[in-house]
Image (cartoon, rainbow, N blue to C red):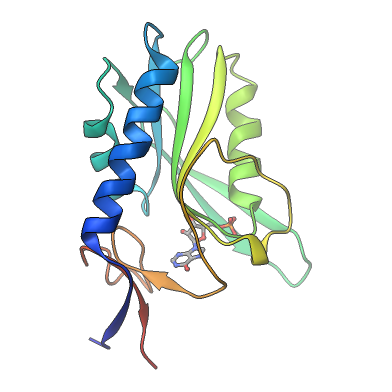
Length: 171
Ligand code: IMP
């Protein structure tokens, strides 16, 4: 395994996730709330965020994969669909990182066709320098530079997802 330089340590992540959970708790009291983690990268963030939200909620997973072609637009494929309808519910999509924004644009448009009461986005990370399409992030953990990060659910070639902090691979 290559070594990893720490970008954001585990304590800092835990503090920020608790803050996001408290915000969501305040914003969504009394609502029929569904968290929709986007697999695979958001599974660690989603598990911690869900436990930081002090409200009843449902969790339903969604899987999608983004392919980058030679053109500037990517093609996004659904690999796992929700198992329950979201009509009339307040949905928070939980993502690991918004990079170009193509995956989230596809995903949010897809979910909106199902007539939820509202759709919001919680993303652990955002790399604004890489954005190709604007995406509004309602609950953002951290904004980062244009570096490739691993750990806390994020992978490089399916490795490093279990690293408990966010880091950058040392070349
Ligand atoms: P987007 O469609 O370009 O916004 O792609 C978002 C997806 O790309 C994320 O859900 C991640 O799976 C992946 N991704 C983007 N940047 C990174 C990174 O720095 N580390 C690991 N995965 C990344």
